[in-house]
Structures are given as structure tokens and as C-alpha cells.
Length: 296
Image (cartoon, rainbow, N blue to C red; front, side):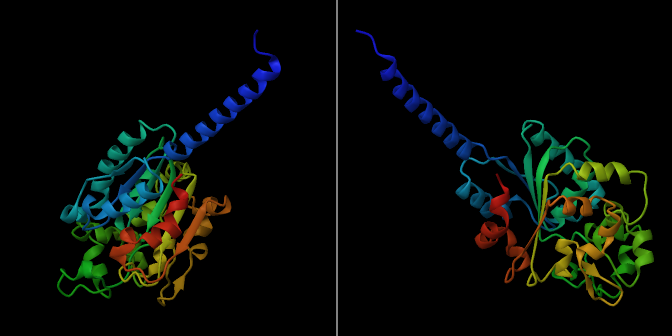
């Protein structure tokens, strides 16, 4: 005797439920977008093994690519020299991942990633995570400047805003609020990507940057290097060295798309206290609180 329809239907339903659950399980473990990590000044891939480990601990099987370019001392080369090479490396990865990728960029690397996104018309970066990066510039004495005798924040502009200074990456984002005219004229990087001065690529760069789906801005008051620390979230000093928050900066003119992203609901800010600059990428609490939720 053959099987009755009443016998087959429950079996088919059970199989269907099993297949659906199996497909959800596969998607939840193998469906994570690749993560590209870009290091900061005086760093290299070795410093990001902990971060890579965190990602695979919570999202097993995630492809993590830490770009090995302009490591350690070479990271001080001009950013416009570095950016084309980072763009090639990132495009090589993204070309094999049409579903999109995330970029997680630390310190100076956040500025490199911003410029890569702005100058790449066909990128498929889903989420741009900026980890304690001087996005609105740097103005303060740090350990990174101690190798320059007598170079303190009061007179660093004399070195940075000329052809010699612009051969060093940190001068590309040195933003002296007391010498704004010199900054706009002598800094060949940050005023361009922030749209603080008009240029022929402004519209295209804005459109390119807005291809991202989400921007995550991470920083905190105990950083000790990024000055002011609010620069990690597009805040910066006025001429009195009072911090002006993001929405009262160049945000108003929406020159590179920051206001559009914010209005869209696609800017997330995460403030974490008690974290020193060199610890952001190795602090699991930072990862859990500020990073993990976006890497899906």
C-alpha cells in the first residue's frame, strides 16, 4: 500500500522547517561582510591582531583583511602619496565581494579611508568605522611630534603649512585655529576632503562618499593624542580654543555629505571614556560597545 497524502504532508512540513532553520543558521554564521582594517601613523598590521581576533570571536568565519602598506615609519609619507595605494588595495578586495564590505580605520587611517571613499566612484563600502581619528584635524602637542625639536602647537603651523611640512603626513591634518588663512592656503589635504575650500572635485567626492550606508565615529575624552578628542566626531576648536561640536562646523554647508548622512540617520557616535589612544584597537569593551553591532 502507498503513503496517504495525510502521511506525506506532516513529513514535508518538517523537512521544510528544517531547511529554513538550516538556511538561517548558515546565513548567521557565514553571511558576515568582509572587514578591511587600515592602520594609523607609526603602526602596521601587527598592532591589529587583537582586533582581528575580536571580530572572529563574535562573528566566526568573517574575512578580515589588514592592509599592509606604509607601515611604521613609512606612514609619515604625505597622505596624497599613500591614498592611491590604499585605494588599489581596497578595490582589489571589494572587487571580489559585490555584497559589500566594512572598513575599520584607526587614527590617521580614518583620514586615509575618508579620502579613499571620496575618490572612489564605484566603491561598495557598506559601513565606515572611524576609530579615534582626527577627522576635523589635530591641534595639540603629542608624543608623535616630540621628534621635532621645539615643535609645539604654538608654532607648528610655521613648519606644516609649506612645501617642506606637507611632505609629512601629520601636517596634512594639522589644523591651527589661530592661523586659519594659513591652514586653508598651505594645507593641501584636510581642507580639500572636508570641502572647506572650493575645488573641481567637490561634487563628485561628495557623491562618492555618500555611497556608504553608515558612518560610525568612535572616540573619547581620555585619548591623550587626538586633540581635541572631539575631532574624532568632527568637533573642533574655534579661535578661542573652545570646542565647537560637529553640527556647528562645516556640517552646515554639507560640503562632503556629513549633514546628509546625519539627516538620513546614518551617523552613529560612540563615546568611550578611560581609553588611551594606542589601546582603542585592543580594548574588547570598545569593540563590544562601539564596533560589533555594525559588522553584519
